[in-house]
Length: 278
Image (tube, rainbow, N blue to C red; front, side, top):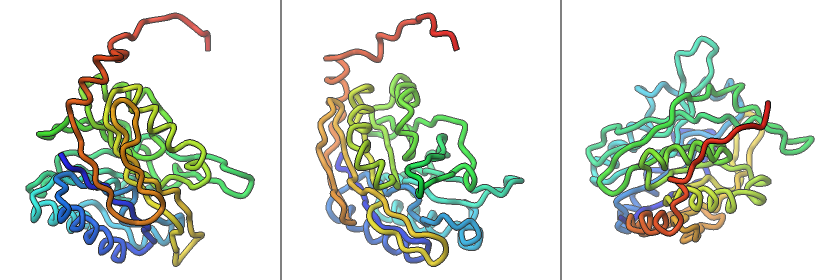
């Protein structure tokens, strides 16, 4: 299966981002991709909650979701919408950060709401409290396709290896990690964490990313690390998109999953143990 990983520089304007995403999906399809993946928050990058409430939509009304479903159906491809920022009906008004797997008929095959929230202090002047605006998901998600069973995750989930181990032990052969990774933490940790998740699980790891400077009409702008990656089950980085927007193509060979797990069958070597006392 040829996968096309889309690297974007989204803004806080969903209409502009939608046009960018559709154009890149078409570019990937034209290059022969049968599985296309977009990054986290494809539709809108913003830290201004009032602006988000004004421009975001519920899933049923989201125009980016509708447009990308139509593209998948028109091209007959599998499409991972890395995630969309969406309104919810939660009483506290928090949004959802939701990843979608779309089938070749344009139908929604699976949904995954990001479990782990990016609540960190990168520096004295750079803090993030994702949980203030987004409510965390509560369920790990696997989805079956003709070419692989896919384990769906998003961005900060990457730092929680038990999630990936559970997905792999449940049958995942491909792990998706769409991201809008912070440029500081990305430079320090992005490559090594993605390689570690591949090595630990014997899975393909596909990580389409946001990149560069994200202009904002309201609230502070953001910078993200880029470097969309594809990592093979033995841990080799087989594609690195650098920092420019675009489409990166990679051939996904499912047989490599079995080979890596045969060489080091650590997924079957779990043992119970005691301690330490908490």
